[in-house]
Length: 94
Length: 160
Image (tube, rainbow over all chains, first blue to last red):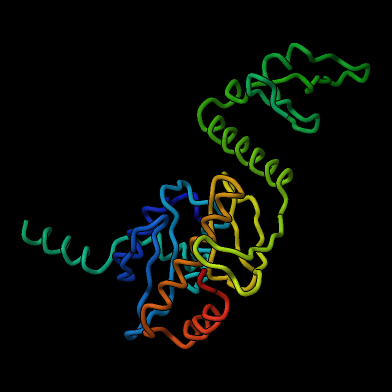
């Protein structure tokens, strides 16, 4: 488990960039992952926790219906396709 | 395990020593050297930077496990939320989670509340249940699983 490597802002950013989750502001951040037009998973991210507590990290993975290892992998690759294309264009364009 | 200066008492079975230990060494009648390992040492004397980091991490880990020992799991029943009553009480487990506490209901494993103390964790869980209820009541664009949960929530939550 790599919870110590991330804070809650990292999780929010990855969910927004990679999973297209829109978060609603509240006491904590809540957002839905949509699959084929249906709301399929709901994640809750507490504000300002670094590092993310272990059981909270597991709970967030569970909310996305993946295991902790898969959640690690999701968070470890913050570069999404759009950002990559942007970087590629920048490097070619000079 | 740690004194007021944050120095670690080295267990007898750890085969490491510092200058102070060297001074405490004596020769046995067999001719072999014996060391007194019981003296307190500062790990930064032995391996300055990296070890100090590991030492502090270990110290934190021990403090965290001490906390887990002192604050074992607590099982409670919630029968009322913030703005809603519940038609039947739900069972919740509250337990330490590193620096804070986490509250999780048995029957609603997709929910949790985190807080700096047990009360805040439970309050956040209550808030979370209400927040999910409001989300579910917005429309019916949910997967089958969530539509089942919506039916459960309709039975569970009662308006004041």
